[in-house]
Amino acid sequence: MDPEWIPILIIVLAITLTVGWLVNGLIKARHRYPPAAAGGLEASRQLELLSNENAGLKGQVGRLEERIAVLERIATDPAERTAREIDQLR
Image (tube, rainbow, N blue to C red; front, side, top):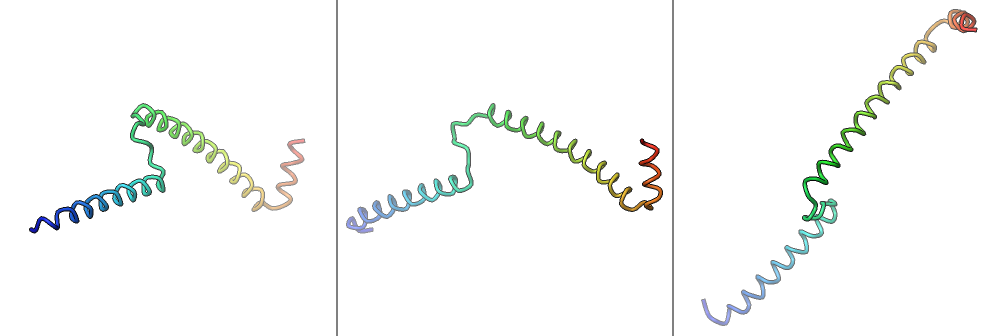
């Protein structure tokens, strides 16, 4: 290798590393990666919050399924029977 190629090689290497660093930063920003300083404690707290929210949403879905079942029963029952049941509730 000729000594005249060494500065060109260093410049190309520096440009390649800089572009790689910039592309890496753009990818992290695009996917909203947490900063490197974020600890495991924050991640575990976020997991706990998501688990609690998931449990609440499961309960809500269960209640909505029950309500839909009642509405389906009302919609598919004969009109006389539904009227009779409403009158019995009064």
